[in-house]
Structures are given as structure tokens and as C-alpha cells.
Length: 114
Image: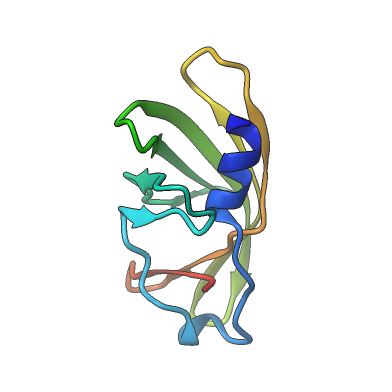
């Protein structure tokens, strides 16, 4: 259940141009609904990867710590973080993939696929 929920939390169709995507908020409501919140989402580029720790917070307020890793692809004006994978950091063993894509501009601004 938790694995499926986290997958849905981050799922979203991508807009054609990363510059058209909305700014990435560090805290946002899960696109999967159910009252889950994604918090502390702040990817950074490290070599050929984008990485961010993040929390998935249940409607009851339970925090589940996770780590997301993406392939970092250089594109005009920045880096596209795609082909994301995540795993639980709280010993639960949950892991999966996410279709979420993040664009990190050269000026540091971050945007996510809508």
C-alpha cells in the first residue's frame, strides 16, 4: 500500500518545455491524493545524478523518510532530472520508480513536471 501510494504521490504528466513547468515547492500535496504530503523535496545535481532526501507524510502525521535519485541530463539552460528512483530510508525496505521530472536551471531555480 505504502509503495503504491508513494508512486502515485510523484506521478504527473510532463509539459513539453521545462521552462513552462511550475516552480518546485519543497512541500506539496501528493498528486495521488489521500491527504499525503511530500515535504523537504529539494533535488541537487551531484555528478551524473540528481538527489534529494524527502519525507512522505501520512494524513495521520506519520513521517516516512525517503531518498530519490534521478539521472541528470544536461539540457539547454540547466539539468533535467529524469528516470527517478526512490527508496525508504526508515528501514521499511520500500522502493520504486517515479515519473516525476525536475528541471534545475543554471540560476539554481527548480521546476517540476506538472
